[in-house]
Image 1 (cartoon, rainbow, N blue to C red):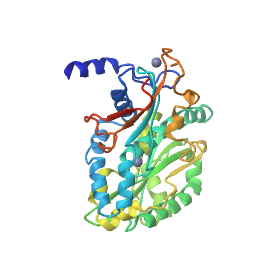
Image 2: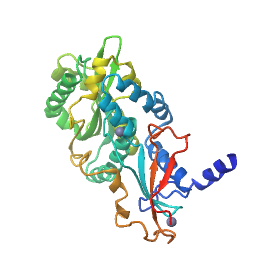
Image 3: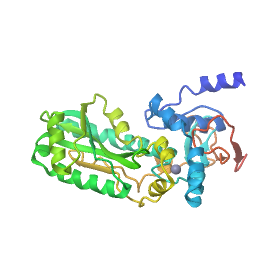
Amino acid sequence: MNLAANQLNSNSKPLKESENGAFIPSLDTVQQVDNAEREFRRASQSKSERWTLRTPTKRDIVARLERVSLEDALRLKQCCSAFRVLTCGTHTLRSYPTFRCKKLFCPDCAAERANRLSRQTEAKIAEAMQTNKGRLCLLTLTLKNAATLDGGLSNLKKAFTQFKRKKVFKERIKGYFGGFEYTFNPKTNDFHIHLHLIVLRGKFWNQSDISDAWRDVTGDSFIVDIREIKDAGKGVKEVCKYVVKSNDLMKMPDEKFLEVVKMKKGTRMFVSGGCFYNVKLDDADETDENVFSQFADLTEGDACPFCKEELFDVFVDRSQHIGLHELNAMPNIVKNNSS
Ligand SMILES: [Zn+2]
Ligand SMILES: [Zn+2]
């Protein structure tokens, strides 16, 4: 067992993005999938976030969800429970779950969303910053607690629309993009919704002036935060790592949890504008499948571009292990064509 684990560790070293963007783990297939997925998730998560996502687990959320909606619980359970893998035995050319629930409260889909956003945005940010001078800052705008999620979200969106039209905003902020996040307070039984933005600040704008301007449009909310960030990539992950934390889900009474589950599909949870107008979270176009689009043409029987070995398609069923983070258990493997 230890020997195997050591072997895996030594083999897993090259598991990082190569120059051409491919994930090239060199591992035995089963562990390969697990590790690739684990690395995929880790790429965007700090140690504390990983901990947050680990406790409670997706299994806990499924159990919690079964109390309010069996149908949604089943979908969440099926999400990321099986994978298609195209591999030569050493290199993974493609690996993606056969089904994703795409719910914002799903830990697996939230991690994928954050990863996807970082992939999509880094180049765009760098490009925008070549022609626009300023400091990258993380700006957080909050709203006084909201009794309902839908109501609070729409109030925050309205307030932000007014806010960005203000002269003082236009004078100081050259570009912005970011996402909504909410927490839940069980004591007051309401949601706390905020908007995390990455902004390119031209002229200096201090926190108390921002607070005044924000109170101007909200009437009663004035809690804001602005701080410079050094690393754009980290900032992106910061603003889009999750929409709601698992911990908060577990604290909600049934009717509030149901609100989260039944949130309208396609509710916009991302904003962008100014010189960052083309930073978008493209939910429609990108799937797990075409993350590996550079190998889209390859199929079973073709030669691996890295080692020339023959590629084969593998179906990995992990339905006994809910969620990508339950990594200790061994999945069952079914080879389609074990030739
Ligand atoms: Zn999911
Ligand atoms: Zn290979």
